[in-house]
Amino acid sequence: MGIDELIGTYLTACAVEGKSANTIFSYRASLADFRRVGNRLGFPDSPDGYTVREVYAFLEEVQRREAKPAYQYRRHREVKAFFSWCRRMGYVEENAFARVPLVKLEQQIVQPFKEQEVQRLLSSQDTARYTGCRNYAVFLFLLDTGVRASECVSVLLEDVDWERPGSGCCTGRGRSSAGWE
Image (tube, one colour):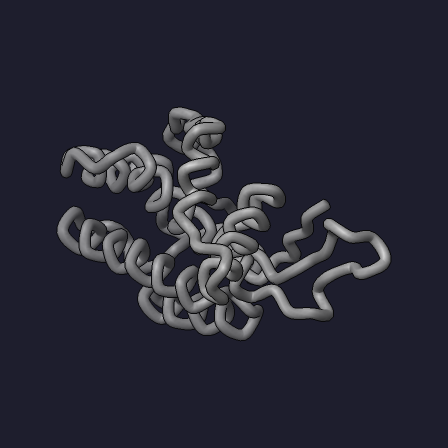
């Protein structure tokens, strides 16, 4: 089976296995980029023909575009995931991408809000009005729990542990479970 056909099967498998639409969209973009580069540089049509040489050639092309390290990292990780799947399914003996280390990313530390910023945010709401009271409560929930805004809007009444006020669970990023306490 050729690599293009396998990519189609892989993306179908991702959907069937429950990967999010955003994840599949990103995988599709990374694999399309990989194939464009591969077609231009004459990469093998069969996945078992790939070596570390092709991996570095692809990564060099991505780097040459002056792409940010996070973009390079994502492209590498997502194509590597495809080749890992190929290995798991028995299409290749070895995943050449697994032999090449991922691009090092600078660890980004999110700075918490300063007390003045929190006070300004909370005081911006008119708690005598319904929307102000709601927004105030949402701000406190986000600040106290650290959940993402997308997780906050998905919280349902049954997600709250009423026996232990201040704790609960909701669906997180990528449909994982996100809890707060």
